[in-house]
Image: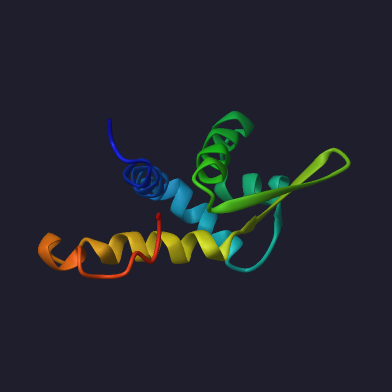
Length: 106
């Protein structure tokens, strides 16, 4: 069985592996967005957008806030920092990695 931190890293990279999800993240860089605005900007159906938003939420990259019937989405900066640390860890040879303090996914 894989370590839970490896599964977390895989979820990060899986969530970032789709151009439409990257576009969603790019749109959210400007601040919180209503789902209807995201749908209009992406020119896609509600079910497809929901799938991509769920993938990003499950990986922790975005947060959802409900207001009445509407859902609003925003970025979660801490997850991007965590994903950045996870990716950077692969630059360090395994023999050196053991000497480093554990910064993430302890």
